[in-house]
Image 1 (tube, rainbow, N blue to C red):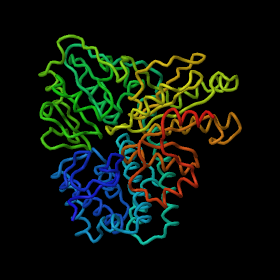
Image 2 (cartoon, one colour):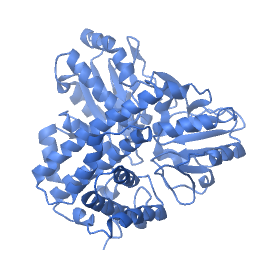
Image 3 (cartoon, one colour):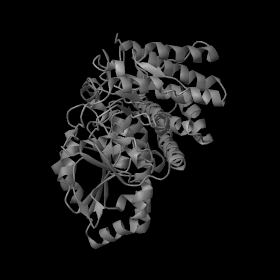
Image 4 (tube, one colour):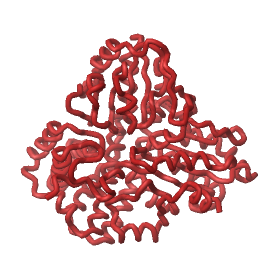
Length: 510
């Protein structure tokens, strides 16, 4: 009998499933507890009414089980106990999904893993006070469906509805972020670190960063973003703080090397946290849903005093430190959300019509540690000078420090933001299709996406719901998608695996 079973992320062992220990670093105990938590959430959705408290339990519980969020067995056990007190002992076991017919398992996995991604985005919107009844209701509907004996056609319809609801959720989060912190505007961000005390903030939560910036005002501490927090520099209400200085390091999977003996405090606001090495465990702090054994957790009071004290105690670098991205550049640009890009839409449309811009590529998504992800670096490097690259999420760290120049004053790499800012890319694509009086699929636009965890799954489902075709997806296709379901996706949406940058570029540009 396997000690554990998990195949929800791209890096899963042998592209089939982790059965001994998680490639992400989670132990069999944590993996099995996350399954138990998922089972209890499904029972809750089946037995209790949709109240605010129950909805919150579903959202937080689902977010907790996303890859690289929570490695703390005791904390997960407490979550399970809390739900069992309300529902009684569980009578649904998620193992029944993992062990059922592979096509049904595949479709239910797409729904469940997509739902986890939606939970992350709903959590971030709720933190800022934004909710939506349709989104909240769908958590109950989808979890109930996972426990039912439904046909493949019924489940496929629900897969696409998962994409529809995620679009609504990304739109809600976009509204929450921009109404709270302003519309992002393009900004250049340094990767160099100034001498003196500093704090590195990673994850995705804008409010946690805002609270920390406020609490560190005039304390002689500089704040640096990391990974998916880079786009925060573009929000007017965040960049008004002069001690928000730059971006530390690259994408999440490099943290064990980049945080090794770092003379600063590191705050994890959400995923992705990797197993924390002893060389920096004493300076790692977690908050919200992210927890790791042996690190200090900042509770709901959001009092970041321990983080501040640790930063002052460590003192930072003695001299300014030059750091670069993976290609040697030390300046990153970000802030090209739909507000910024659509403000120059006429310029882009004119450049396309004149032939100055031949093609637009959306190259982005999750990054990861597995070999093969340098495909995205090479792909972007080889894009012709008369093309532009839209990017988002942490996959951009493969190439966002490269200077590819510009076309008619339009930068050739435009960073649209975090993974949830796929909404911006969709909005831009729809507006361009209106301008050219054609469908999105007829635009000179190609999507080359990288995936790692469940937020990427829900974004993919949104693209499928919108009928967007010819998506290139990699580095590998999801292990939880069965051959038959994959055939459906290929036939209906023309999803393609990656080949080589050279071959894919040649095929796209024809």
